[in-house]
Image (cartoon, rainbow over all chains, first blue to last red; front, side, top):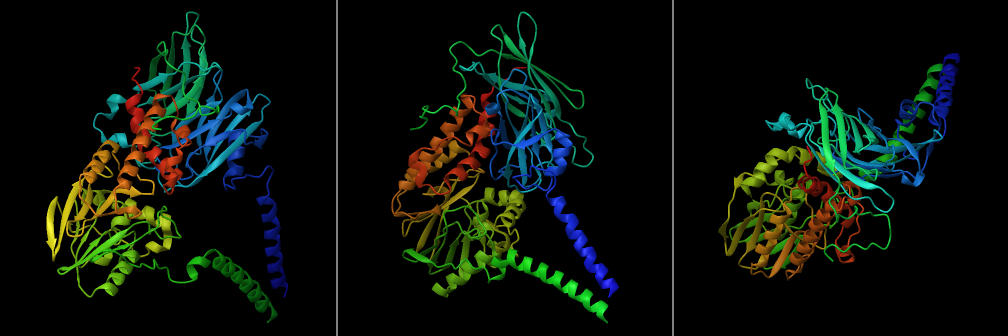
Length: 284
Length: 321
Protein backbone atom coordinates (compact mmCIF):
# COMPACT_ATOMS: atom_id res chain seq x y z
CA UNK A 1 0.00 0.00 0.00
CA UNK A 2 2.80 2.39 0.84
CA UNK A 3 4.46 1.72 -2.53
CA UNK A 4 1.28 2.44 -4.35
CA UNK A 5 0.77 5.70 -2.51
CA UNK A 6 4.29 6.75 -3.34
CA UNK A 7 3.53 6.03 -6.95
CA UNK A 8 0.45 8.18 -6.96
CA UNK A 9 2.32 10.87 -5.08
CA UNK A 10 5.08 10.92 -7.65
CA UNK A 11 2.65 11.25 -10.52
CA UNK A 12 1.01 14.20 -8.81
CA UNK A 13 4.37 15.79 -8.17
CA UNK A 14 5.29 15.45 -11.83
CA UNK A 15 2.04 17.08 -12.86
CA UNK A 16 2.62 19.88 -10.38
CA UNK A 17 6.09 20.54 -11.75
CA UNK A 18 5.01 20.33 -15.35
CA UNK A 19 2.22 22.89 -15.07
CA UNK A 20 4.26 25.96 -14.06
CA UNK A 21 7.03 25.03 -16.49
CA UNK A 22 4.56 25.29 -19.35
CA UNK A 23 3.39 28.69 -18.20
CA UNK A 24 6.92 30.07 -17.80
CA UNK A 25 7.64 33.75 -17.52
CA UNK A 26 5.31 35.95 -19.52
CA UNK A 27 4.43 36.87 -22.15
CA UNK A 28 3.58 33.53 -23.67
CA UNK A 29 4.34 32.94 -27.32
CA UNK A 30 1.34 33.51 -29.62
CA UNK A 31 2.91 31.09 -32.12
CA UNK A 32 3.22 28.40 -29.39
CA UNK A 33 6.68 27.37 -30.52
CA UNK A 34 8.42 24.80 -28.30
CA UNK A 35 11.69 26.69 -28.74
CA UNK A 36 10.48 30.13 -27.74
CA UNK A 37 11.62 30.15 -24.09
CA UNK A 38 15.11 29.00 -24.99
CA UNK A 39 15.47 31.34 -27.96
CA UNK A 40 14.19 34.31 -25.96
CA UNK A 41 16.84 33.72 -23.30
CA UNK A 42 19.54 33.13 -25.91
CA UNK A 43 18.96 36.10 -28.19
CA UNK A 44 17.28 38.70 -25.97
CA UNK A 45 19.19 37.83 -22.79
CA UNK A 46 17.17 39.37 -20.01
CA UNK A 47 15.93 42.36 -22.02
CA UNK A 48 12.21 43.14 -21.88
CA UNK A 49 10.28 41.42 -24.67
CA UNK A 50 6.79 42.22 -25.95
CA UNK A 51 4.81 40.63 -28.77
CA UNK A 52 3.89 43.54 -30.98
CA UNK A 53 1.96 43.45 -34.25
CA UNK A 54 3.57 46.79 -35.14
CA UNK A 55 6.47 44.66 -36.37
CA UNK A 56 5.24 43.24 -39.68
CA UNK A 57 6.73 39.92 -40.68
CA UNK A 58 5.95 38.69 -44.18
CA UNK A 59 6.64 35.13 -45.32
CA UNK A 60 4.54 32.61 -47.23
CA UNK A 61 2.34 30.24 -45.18
CA UNK A 62 3.93 27.35 -47.05
CA UNK A 63 7.52 27.30 -48.30
CA UNK A 64 7.66 26.41 -51.98
CA UNK A 65 11.47 26.25 -51.98
CA UNK A 66 12.87 25.61 -48.49
CA UNK A 67 16.30 26.85 -49.62
CA UNK A 68 14.98 30.32 -50.44
CA UNK A 69 11.90 31.41 -48.51
CA UNK A 70 11.17 35.13 -48.87
CA UNK A 71 11.09 36.96 -45.55
CA UNK A 72 10.69 40.62 -44.71
CA UNK A 73 10.65 42.35 -41.35
CA UNK A 74 9.19 45.83 -41.28
CA UNK A 75 9.38 47.77 -38.02
CA UNK A 76 8.84 51.22 -39.51
CA UNK A 77 5.64 51.57 -37.46
CA UNK A 78 7.84 51.70 -34.30
CA UNK A 79 9.77 54.80 -35.42
CA UNK A 80 13.38 54.74 -34.24
CA UNK A 81 14.84 51.24 -34.04
CA UNK A 82 18.38 50.36 -32.89
CA UNK A 83 18.67 46.72 -33.92
CA UNK A 84 16.61 44.03 -35.62
CA UNK A 85 16.85 40.25 -35.73
CA UNK A 86 15.24 37.50 -37.77
CA UNK A 87 14.83 34.03 -36.27
CA UNK A 88 13.59 30.69 -37.63
CA UNK A 89 12.83 28.74 -34.44
CA UNK A 90 13.31 25.16 -35.60
CA UNK A 91 16.35 25.69 -37.79
CA UNK A 92 19.63 24.08 -36.69
CA UNK A 93 20.84 27.70 -36.56
CA UNK A 94 17.79 29.71 -35.51
CA UNK A 95 19.38 33.16 -35.82
CA UNK A 96 19.14 34.34 -39.44
CA UNK A 97 20.63 37.80 -39.18
CA UNK A 98 21.06 40.89 -37.09
CA UNK A 99 20.40 44.24 -38.74
CA UNK A 100 21.71 47.56 -37.50
CA UNK A 101 19.66 50.05 -39.50
CA UNK A 102 21.69 53.13 -38.48
CA UNK A 103 20.10 55.95 -40.47
CA UNK A 104 18.20 53.49 -42.68
CA UNK A 105 14.57 52.51 -42.21
CA UNK A 106 13.94 49.61 -39.82
CA UNK A 107 13.06 47.34 -42.71
CA UNK A 108 14.96 44.39 -44.15
CA UNK A 109 13.98 41.68 -46.59
CA UNK A 110 15.93 38.63 -47.69
CA UNK A 111 15.46 34.95 -48.48
CA UNK A 112 16.18 32.21 -45.98
CA UNK A 113 16.62 28.46 -45.69
CA UNK A 114 14.31 26.57 -43.39
CA UNK A 115 14.91 23.01 -42.26
CA UNK A 116 11.30 22.16 -41.37
CA UNK A 117 7.95 23.77 -40.66
CA UNK A 118 8.69 26.51 -38.13
CA UNK A 119 7.81 29.81 -36.55
CA UNK A 120 9.68 32.61 -38.33
CA UNK A 121 10.13 35.81 -36.34
CA UNK A 122 11.23 39.36 -36.68
CA UNK A 123 12.19 41.48 -33.70
CA UNK A 124 13.10 45.13 -33.33
CA UNK A 125 14.81 46.77 -30.35
CA UNK A 126 13.72 50.31 -29.67
CA UNK A 127 15.95 52.89 -27.91
CA UNK A 128 14.33 52.04 -24.54
CA UNK A 129 15.83 48.55 -24.77
CA UNK A 130 12.53 46.74 -25.39
CA UNK A 131 12.43 44.00 -28.03
CA UNK A 132 9.21 44.07 -30.08
CA UNK A 133 8.62 40.60 -31.51
CA UNK A 134 6.27 39.32 -34.16
CA UNK A 135 6.18 36.33 -36.48
CA UNK A 136 4.37 33.87 -38.68
CA UNK A 137 4.24 30.09 -39.10
CA UNK A 138 5.75 28.66 -42.28
CA UNK A 139 4.87 25.11 -43.29
CA UNK A 140 7.56 23.26 -45.21
CA UNK A 141 8.92 19.99 -46.51
CA UNK A 142 12.24 19.21 -44.83
CA UNK A 143 15.81 19.90 -45.68
CA UNK A 144 16.46 23.51 -46.69
CA UNK A 145 19.48 23.90 -44.39
CA UNK A 146 21.10 20.54 -45.05
CA UNK A 147 20.86 20.61 -48.85
CA UNK A 148 24.19 21.31 -50.59
CA UNK A 149 24.42 24.65 -52.43
CA UNK A 150 23.28 24.31 -56.05
CA UNK A 151 26.27 26.33 -57.25
CA UNK A 152 28.73 23.59 -56.27
CA UNK A 153 27.47 21.69 -59.31
CA UNK A 154 29.01 24.37 -61.55
CA UNK A 155 32.72 23.86 -62.21
CA UNK A 156 33.57 27.55 -62.15
CA UNK A 157 31.50 28.52 -59.09
CA UNK A 158 34.58 29.66 -57.16
CA UNK A 159 35.47 32.17 -59.90
CA UNK A 160 32.24 34.04 -59.25
CA UNK A 161 32.14 34.23 -55.46
CA UNK A 162 31.70 37.81 -54.30
CA UNK A 163 30.18 39.13 -57.51
CA UNK A 164 27.61 41.76 -56.62
CA UNK A 165 24.51 42.85 -58.49
CA UNK A 166 22.80 45.88 -57.03
CA UNK A 167 20.53 48.77 -57.79
CA UNK A 168 19.62 51.91 -55.91
CA UNK A 169 16.32 53.65 -56.58
CA UNK A 170 15.88 57.42 -55.98
CA UNK A 171 14.74 58.50 -52.54
CA UNK A 172 11.00 58.84 -52.02
CA UNK A 173 9.39 61.78 -50.23
CA UNK A 174 10.43 60.37 -46.85
CA UNK A 175 14.11 60.48 -47.87
CA UNK A 176 14.40 56.68 -48.03
CA UNK A 177 15.93 55.06 -51.09
CA UNK A 178 15.31 51.40 -51.92
CA UNK A 179 18.54 49.41 -52.27
CA UNK A 180 18.44 45.86 -53.58
CA UNK A 181 21.51 43.66 -53.79
CA UNK A 182 22.43 40.12 -54.71
CA UNK A 183 25.78 38.52 -53.91
CA UNK A 184 27.11 35.38 -55.59
CA UNK A 185 28.07 33.13 -52.71
CA UNK A 186 27.35 29.46 -51.81
CA UNK A 187 26.38 30.60 -48.30
CA UNK A 188 26.95 27.01 -47.25
CA UNK A 189 25.69 26.04 -43.78
CA UNK A 190 28.42 23.40 -43.36
CA UNK A 191 25.86 20.72 -42.55
CA UNK A 192 26.92 18.51 -45.46
CA UNK A 193 29.52 16.07 -44.10
CA UNK A 194 33.11 17.10 -44.78
CA UNK A 195 32.30 20.50 -46.32
CA UNK A 196 33.04 23.44 -44.03
CA UNK A 197 30.60 26.28 -43.46
CA UNK A 198 31.15 29.07 -45.96
CA UNK A 199 28.84 32.06 -45.71
CA UNK A 200 28.69 35.83 -45.83
CA UNK A 201 29.09 37.24 -42.30
CA UNK A 202 29.09 41.01 -42.52
CA UNK A 203 27.82 43.56 -44.99
CA UNK A 204 28.05 47.31 -44.57
CA UNK A 205 26.54 50.01 -46.74
CA UNK A 206 28.43 53.31 -46.80
CA UNK A 207 27.87 56.55 -48.68
CA UNK A 208 30.69 57.95 -50.80
CA UNK A 209 30.76 61.71 -50.14
CA UNK A 210 33.37 64.45 -50.53
CA UNK A 211 33.63 64.57 -46.73
CA UNK A 212 34.10 60.86 -46.04
CA UNK A 213 32.26 57.55 -46.05
CA UNK A 214 29.52 57.50 -43.39
CA UNK A 215 28.02 54.09 -42.66
CA UNK A 216 24.34 53.93 -43.53
CA UNK A 217 23.48 50.41 -42.35
CA UNK A 218 25.08 47.12 -41.35
CA UNK A 219 23.96 43.49 -41.61
CA UNK A 220 25.41 40.59 -39.61
CA UNK A 221 24.35 37.71 -41.83
CA UNK A 222 24.38 34.03 -40.86
CA UNK A 223 24.00 30.45 -42.19
CA UNK A 224 20.23 30.48 -42.79
CA UNK A 225 20.41 33.27 -45.37
CA UNK A 226 19.89 31.66 -48.79
CA UNK A 227 22.58 30.80 -51.32
CA UNK A 228 23.40 33.87 -53.43
CA UNK A 229 22.03 36.16 -50.71
CA UNK A 230 19.57 38.84 -51.70
CA UNK A 231 18.73 41.84 -49.52
CA UNK A 232 16.35 44.75 -49.79
CA UNK A 233 16.96 47.79 -47.58
CA UNK A 234 15.62 51.33 -47.42
CA UNK A 235 18.64 53.59 -46.88
CA UNK A 236 18.97 57.35 -46.51
CA UNK A 237 21.87 58.53 -48.70
CA UNK A 238 23.20 61.98 -47.73
CA UNK A 239 22.41 64.69 -50.31
CA UNK A 240 26.06 64.93 -51.42
CA UNK A 241 26.50 61.16 -51.92
CA UNK A 242 28.15 60.28 -55.23
CA UNK A 243 27.75 56.51 -54.85
CA UNK A 244 27.13 53.83 -52.24
CA UNK A 245 29.86 51.42 -51.18
CA UNK A 246 29.14 47.87 -50.15
CA UNK A 247 31.83 46.25 -47.98
CA UNK A 248 31.56 42.75 -46.63
CA UNK A 249 33.38 39.64 -45.56
CA UNK A 250 32.60 35.94 -45.42
CA UNK A 251 33.56 33.56 -42.60
CA UNK A 252 36.65 32.40 -44.51
CA UNK A 253 38.00 35.93 -44.83
CA UNK A 254 36.83 36.56 -48.39
CA UNK A 255 36.25 40.24 -49.08
CA UNK A 256 33.18 41.63 -50.78
CA UNK A 257 33.36 45.09 -52.23
CA UNK A 258 31.25 46.93 -54.74
CA UNK A 259 30.42 50.50 -55.75
CA UNK A 260 26.73 51.06 -56.37
CA UNK A 261 26.03 54.07 -58.60
CA UNK A 262 23.42 56.65 -57.74
CA UNK A 263 20.22 56.29 -59.77
CA UNK A 264 20.28 57.92 -63.21
CA UNK A 265 18.50 61.29 -63.61
CA UNK A 266 14.81 60.84 -64.28
CA UNK A 267 14.57 57.49 -62.48
CA UNK A 268 11.51 57.05 -60.31
CA UNK A 269 11.54 56.02 -56.64
CA UNK A 270 10.78 52.40 -55.90
CA UNK A 271 7.18 51.33 -55.85
CA UNK A 272 5.63 51.36 -52.41
CA UNK A 273 2.75 49.12 -51.49
CA UNK A 274 1.93 51.25 -48.48
CA UNK A 275 0.05 54.32 -49.72
CA UNK A 276 -3.51 53.85 -50.88
CA UNK A 277 -4.77 55.41 -54.10
CA UNK A 278 -1.95 53.91 -56.17
CA UNK A 279 -3.92 51.47 -58.24
CA UNK A 280 -2.15 48.72 -60.05
CA UNK A 281 -2.33 49.03 -63.77
CA UNK A 282 -0.06 46.29 -65.07
CA UNK A 283 -1.82 44.20 -67.67
CA UNK A 284 -5.21 45.74 -67.00
CA UNK B 1 -2.37 -7.80 -2.89
CA UNK B 2 -3.56 -4.21 -2.77
CA UNK B 3 -0.24 -2.84 -4.01
CA UNK B 4 -0.20 -4.36 -7.49
CA UNK B 5 -3.87 -3.65 -7.85
CA UNK B 6 -3.45 0.05 -7.28
CA UNK B 7 -0.45 0.16 -9.59
CA UNK B 8 -2.43 -1.58 -12.20
CA UNK B 9 -5.20 0.95 -11.75
CA UNK B 10 -2.82 3.85 -12.22
CA UNK B 11 -1.31 2.24 -15.29
CA UNK B 12 -4.61 1.44 -16.90
CA UNK B 13 -5.87 4.97 -16.26
CA UNK B 14 -2.76 6.33 -17.96
CA UNK B 15 -3.21 3.88 -20.81
CA UNK B 16 -6.83 4.89 -21.23
CA UNK B 17 -5.83 8.54 -21.38
CA UNK B 18 -3.27 7.85 -24.08
CA UNK B 19 -5.77 5.76 -25.99
CA UNK B 20 -8.41 8.47 -25.75
CA UNK B 21 -6.00 11.13 -26.98
CA UNK B 22 -4.98 8.87 -29.84
CA UNK B 23 -8.56 8.23 -30.85
CA UNK B 24 -9.40 11.90 -30.77
CA UNK B 25 -6.48 12.98 -32.93
CA UNK B 26 -6.71 10.07 -35.34
CA UNK B 27 -10.48 9.98 -35.42
CA UNK B 28 -10.87 10.91 -39.07
CA UNK B 29 -8.61 8.10 -40.22
CA UNK B 30 -10.11 5.51 -37.90
CA UNK B 31 -13.65 6.30 -39.07
CA UNK B 32 -13.48 4.26 -42.26
CA UNK B 33 -11.51 3.26 -45.34
CA UNK B 34 -10.39 6.17 -47.46
CA UNK B 35 -12.01 6.24 -50.87
CA UNK B 36 -11.96 8.65 -53.79
CA UNK B 37 -15.42 7.42 -54.83
CA UNK B 38 -14.53 7.78 -58.51
CA UNK B 39 -17.49 8.00 -60.88
CA UNK B 40 -16.89 8.26 -64.62
CA UNK B 41 -18.71 10.92 -66.64
CA UNK B 42 -19.27 10.16 -70.32
CA UNK B 43 -18.17 13.26 -72.24
CA UNK B 44 -18.14 11.91 -75.82
CA UNK B 45 -18.62 8.58 -77.59
CA UNK B 46 -16.52 5.92 -75.78
CA UNK B 47 -14.86 8.70 -73.76
CA UNK B 48 -15.05 9.15 -69.99
CA UNK B 49 -13.54 11.47 -67.40
CA UNK B 50 -13.15 11.22 -63.61
CA UNK B 51 -13.59 14.84 -62.60
CA UNK B 52 -11.48 15.99 -59.68
CA UNK B 53 -11.53 18.98 -57.35
CA UNK B 54 -10.10 22.33 -58.44
CA UNK B 55 -8.32 22.79 -55.08
CA UNK B 56 -4.76 22.09 -54.04
CA UNK B 57 -3.67 18.69 -52.65
CA UNK B 58 -5.25 18.27 -49.20
CA UNK B 59 -5.88 15.52 -46.70
CA UNK B 60 -9.58 15.98 -47.43
CA UNK B 61 -9.34 15.33 -51.19
CA UNK B 62 -6.44 12.85 -51.06
CA UNK B 63 -4.83 14.56 -54.05
CA UNK B 64 -7.81 14.07 -56.36
CA UNK B 65 -7.48 17.41 -58.15
CA UNK B 66 -7.27 16.11 -61.71
CA UNK B 67 -9.46 15.07 -64.62
CA UNK B 68 -8.16 11.66 -65.55
CA UNK B 69 -9.88 9.85 -68.39
CA UNK B 70 -10.24 6.79 -70.54
CA UNK B 71 -11.34 5.86 -74.03
CA UNK B 72 -12.99 2.51 -74.70
CA UNK B 73 -11.81 1.32 -78.13
CA UNK B 74 -12.31 -1.93 -79.99
CA UNK B 75 -8.62 -2.54 -79.29
CA UNK B 76 -8.94 -2.13 -75.53
CA UNK B 77 -9.05 0.77 -73.09
CA UNK B 78 -6.74 3.77 -73.35
CA UNK B 79 -6.12 5.41 -69.96
CA UNK B 80 -5.01 9.03 -69.64
CA UNK B 81 -3.20 9.92 -66.34
CA UNK B 82 -3.16 7.57 -63.36
CA UNK B 83 -3.80 10.00 -60.48
CA UNK B 84 -1.95 11.00 -57.32
CA UNK B 85 -1.62 7.66 -55.49
CA UNK B 86 -1.67 3.89 -55.81
CA UNK B 87 -5.12 3.92 -54.24
CA UNK B 88 -6.40 6.33 -56.92
CA UNK B 89 -4.98 4.14 -59.70
CA UNK B 90 -6.57 1.02 -58.24
CA UNK B 91 -9.95 2.72 -57.76
CA UNK B 92 -9.74 4.11 -61.27
CA UNK B 93 -9.11 0.67 -62.69
CA UNK B 94 -12.01 -0.81 -60.75
CA UNK B 95 -14.32 1.98 -61.96
CA UNK B 96 -13.26 1.40 -65.58
CA UNK B 97 -14.03 -2.29 -65.12
CA UNK B 98 -17.63 -1.38 -64.28
CA UNK B 99 -17.96 0.40 -67.64
CA UNK B 100 -16.29 -2.20 -69.84
CA UNK B 101 -14.93 -5.73 -69.72
CA UNK B 102 -12.27 -4.81 -72.28
CA UNK B 103 -8.65 -5.01 -71.10
CA UNK B 104 -6.51 -1.93 -70.58
CA UNK B 105 -4.45 -1.50 -73.72
CA UNK B 106 -2.21 1.42 -72.88
CA UNK B 107 -1.74 4.25 -70.38
CA UNK B 108 -0.56 7.76 -71.28
CA UNK B 109 1.05 10.12 -68.74
CA UNK B 110 1.19 13.80 -69.74
CA UNK B 111 3.91 15.19 -67.49
CA UNK B 112 5.99 14.67 -64.31
CA UNK B 113 3.66 16.35 -61.79
CA UNK B 114 2.43 14.04 -59.00
CA UNK B 115 -1.24 13.67 -59.90
CA UNK B 116 -0.42 12.45 -63.42
CA UNK B 117 1.54 9.29 -62.61
CA UNK B 118 1.67 8.27 -58.94
CA UNK B 119 -1.14 5.76 -59.66
CA UNK B 120 1.09 3.90 -62.15
CA UNK B 121 1.46 0.93 -59.79
CA UNK B 122 -2.14 -0.06 -60.54
CA UNK B 123 -1.20 -0.40 -64.22
CA UNK B 124 2.06 -2.29 -63.83
CA UNK B 125 0.87 -5.04 -66.20
CA UNK B 126 0.27 -2.73 -69.19
CA UNK B 127 2.51 -0.31 -71.11
CA UNK B 128 2.66 3.14 -69.48
CA UNK B 129 3.71 5.68 -72.11
CA UNK B 130 5.18 9.16 -71.61
CA UNK B 131 7.47 11.60 -73.39
CA UNK B 132 11.20 10.88 -72.84
CA UNK B 133 11.52 14.21 -70.99
CA UNK B 134 8.74 13.18 -68.61
CA UNK B 135 10.39 9.83 -67.90
CA UNK B 136 13.73 11.57 -67.27
CA UNK B 137 12.00 14.10 -65.01
CA UNK B 138 10.33 11.38 -62.93
CA UNK B 139 13.64 9.52 -62.70
CA UNK B 140 15.30 12.65 -61.35
CA UNK B 141 12.58 14.13 -59.16
CA UNK B 142 10.09 11.29 -58.63
CA UNK B 143 11.20 10.37 -55.13
CA UNK B 144 11.05 13.96 -53.92
CA UNK B 145 7.66 14.42 -55.57
CA UNK B 146 6.29 11.27 -53.91
CA UNK B 147 7.69 12.23 -50.49
CA UNK B 148 6.06 15.62 -50.70
CA UNK B 149 2.72 14.01 -51.56
CA UNK B 150 2.95 11.81 -48.48
CA UNK B 151 3.50 14.98 -46.46
CA UNK B 152 0.59 16.82 -48.10
CA UNK B 153 -2.15 14.16 -48.17
CA UNK B 154 -0.92 11.54 -45.70
CA UNK B 155 -2.54 8.12 -45.47
CA UNK B 156 -4.12 8.30 -48.94
CA UNK B 157 -0.62 7.61 -50.24
CA UNK B 158 -0.17 4.34 -48.34
CA UNK B 159 1.71 1.79 -50.43
CA UNK B 160 2.46 4.26 -53.22
CA UNK B 161 5.90 3.86 -54.77
CA UNK B 162 7.59 5.62 -57.65
CA UNK B 163 6.82 3.54 -60.75
CA UNK B 164 8.37 4.84 -63.96
CA UNK B 165 6.50 4.93 -67.26
CA UNK B 166 7.73 1.99 -69.34
CA UNK B 167 7.44 3.28 -72.89
CA UNK B 168 8.82 6.50 -74.42
CA UNK B 169 6.51 8.07 -77.00
CA UNK B 170 7.05 10.87 -79.50
CA UNK B 171 4.88 13.06 -81.69
CA UNK B 172 2.83 10.67 -83.80
CA UNK B 173 -0.64 9.50 -84.69
CA UNK B 174 -1.65 6.11 -83.31
CA UNK B 175 -4.77 4.05 -83.99
CA UNK B 176 -6.62 1.99 -81.41
CA UNK B 177 -9.73 0.38 -82.89
CA UNK B 178 -11.61 3.18 -84.59
CA UNK B 179 -10.03 5.90 -82.47
CA UNK B 180 -7.17 7.83 -84.03
CA UNK B 181 -5.09 9.58 -81.37
CA UNK B 182 -2.68 12.37 -82.19
CA UNK B 183 0.13 12.57 -79.63
CA UNK B 184 1.35 16.17 -79.43
CA UNK B 185 4.67 16.76 -77.63
CA UNK B 186 5.21 20.31 -76.34
CA UNK B 187 7.18 22.12 -73.65
CA UNK B 188 6.44 25.14 -71.48
CA UNK B 189 4.19 24.14 -68.59
CA UNK B 190 6.92 21.56 -67.92
CA UNK B 191 9.91 20.56 -70.05
CA UNK B 192 7.83 17.75 -71.58
CA UNK B 193 4.06 18.13 -71.99
CA UNK B 194 2.03 15.50 -73.85
CA UNK B 195 -1.37 16.49 -75.25
CA UNK B 196 -3.64 13.82 -76.71
CA UNK B 197 -6.19 14.68 -79.39
CA UNK B 198 -8.70 11.99 -80.27
CA UNK B 199 -9.28 12.89 -83.93
CA UNK B 200 -12.30 10.56 -84.04
CA UNK B 201 -14.24 12.47 -81.39
CA UNK B 202 -12.52 15.86 -81.31
CA UNK B 203 -11.72 15.50 -77.59
CA UNK B 204 -8.42 17.12 -76.57
CA UNK B 205 -6.76 16.05 -73.32
CA UNK B 206 -4.49 19.03 -72.69
CA UNK B 207 -2.66 17.78 -69.61
CA UNK B 208 -1.22 20.82 -67.81
CA UNK B 209 -1.08 23.05 -70.89
CA UNK B 210 -4.55 24.51 -70.26
CA UNK B 211 -6.15 25.22 -66.88
CA UNK B 212 -9.84 26.10 -66.66
CA UNK B 213 -11.19 28.24 -63.78
CA UNK B 214 -8.25 26.97 -61.73
CA UNK B 215 -5.03 28.95 -61.25
CA UNK B 216 -2.20 27.52 -63.40
CA UNK B 217 0.77 25.99 -61.60
CA UNK B 218 4.34 26.90 -62.50
CA UNK B 219 6.93 24.76 -60.62
CA UNK B 220 8.55 23.61 -63.89
CA UNK B 221 7.28 26.37 -66.17
CA UNK B 222 8.97 28.52 -68.76
CA UNK B 223 6.32 31.15 -69.35
CA UNK B 224 7.41 32.25 -72.85
CA UNK B 225 7.32 28.63 -74.07
CA UNK B 226 4.02 27.97 -72.35
CA UNK B 227 2.44 30.85 -74.29
CA UNK B 228 3.60 29.16 -77.51
CA UNK B 229 1.95 25.93 -76.35
CA UNK B 230 -1.32 27.84 -76.04
CA UNK B 231 -0.91 29.08 -79.63
CA UNK B 232 -0.53 25.44 -80.66
CA UNK B 233 -3.80 24.57 -78.91
CA UNK B 234 -5.52 27.46 -80.66
CA UNK B 235 -4.46 26.03 -84.03
CA UNK B 236 -6.17 22.68 -83.34
CA UNK B 237 -9.64 21.74 -84.52
CA UNK B 238 -11.39 20.37 -81.43
CA UNK B 239 -14.86 19.76 -80.09
CA UNK B 240 -14.18 19.36 -76.38
CA UNK B 241 -11.26 20.52 -74.26
CA UNK B 242 -10.35 18.46 -71.18
CA UNK B 243 -7.84 20.33 -68.99
CA UNK B 244 -6.13 18.26 -66.34
CA UNK B 245 -7.29 20.83 -63.79
CA UNK B 246 -10.63 22.60 -63.94
CA UNK B 247 -13.74 22.55 -66.05
CA UNK B 248 -14.33 20.69 -69.31
CA UNK B 249 -15.63 22.99 -72.03
CA UNK B 250 -16.76 22.69 -75.65
CA UNK B 251 -14.78 25.83 -76.57
CA UNK B 252 -11.30 27.32 -76.16
CA UNK B 253 -12.27 29.98 -73.63
CA UNK B 254 -9.83 28.56 -71.12
CA UNK B 255 -6.94 28.75 -73.55
CA UNK B 256 -7.49 32.51 -73.50
CA UNK B 257 -7.94 32.43 -69.72
CA UNK B 258 -4.65 30.56 -69.21
CA UNK B 259 -2.87 32.96 -71.58
CA UNK B 260 -4.36 35.99 -69.79
CA UNK B 261 -3.17 34.70 -66.41
CA UNK B 262 0.35 33.85 -67.55
CA UNK B 263 0.75 37.16 -69.34
CA UNK B 264 -0.44 39.10 -66.31
CA UNK B 265 1.70 37.04 -63.91
CA UNK B 266 4.91 37.38 -65.90
CA UNK B 267 4.35 41.07 -66.67
CA UNK B 268 3.46 41.90 -63.07
CA UNK B 269 6.51 40.18 -61.60
CA UNK B 270 8.84 41.81 -64.14
CA UNK B 271 7.32 45.22 -63.43
CA UNK B 272 7.61 44.64 -59.68
CA UNK B 273 11.30 43.67 -59.93
CA UNK B 274 12.00 46.73 -62.10
CA UNK B 275 10.16 48.92 -59.58
CA UNK B 276 12.31 47.89 -56.63
CA UNK B 277 9.91 45.58 -54.83
CA UNK B 278 11.24 42.71 -52.77
CA UNK B 279 10.03 39.15 -53.33
CA UNK B 280 8.28 39.11 -49.94
CA UNK B 281 6.38 42.29 -50.93
CA UNK B 282 5.47 40.73 -54.27
CA UNK B 283 3.60 37.97 -52.39
CA UNK B 284 1.05 40.60 -51.40
CA UNK B 285 0.48 42.34 -54.74
CA UNK B 286 -3.16 42.85 -55.65
CA UNK B 287 -4.61 40.47 -58.23
CA UNK B 288 -7.11 41.90 -60.73
CA UNK B 289 -10.77 41.15 -60.14
CA UNK B 290 -11.18 39.20 -63.39
CA UNK B 291 -9.01 36.40 -62.02
CA UNK B 292 -11.28 35.77 -59.04
CA UNK B 293 -12.91 32.97 -61.06
CA UNK B 294 -9.65 30.98 -60.74
CA UNK B 295 -9.68 28.60 -57.78
CA UNK B 296 -6.80 28.64 -55.20
CA UNK B 297 -5.85 32.03 -56.66
CA UNK B 298 -3.71 33.65 -53.95
CA UNK B 299 -1.99 30.40 -52.95
CA UNK B 300 -0.97 29.51 -56.49
CA UNK B 301 0.04 33.11 -57.18
CA UNK B 302 2.40 32.96 -54.19
CA UNK B 303 3.82 29.64 -55.34
CA UNK B 304 4.43 31.19 -58.74
CA UNK B 305 6.27 34.11 -57.15
CA UNK B 306 8.59 31.52 -55.57
CA UNK B 307 9.11 29.79 -58.93
CA UNK B 308 9.53 32.78 -61.23
CA UNK B 309 10.86 35.71 -59.17
CA UNK B 310 14.50 34.68 -58.55
CA UNK B 311 15.31 34.26 -62.25
CA UNK B 312 13.65 37.53 -63.26
CA UNK B 313 15.50 39.32 -60.47
CA UNK B 314 18.85 37.81 -61.39
CA UNK B 315 18.44 38.98 -64.98
CA UNK B 316 17.34 42.45 -63.91
CA UNK B 317 19.83 43.64 -61.27
CA UNK B 318 22.98 45.15 -62.85
CA UNK B 319 26.47 43.92 -61.96
CA UNK B 320 28.34 46.52 -59.93
CA UNK B 321 31.78 44.98 -59.25
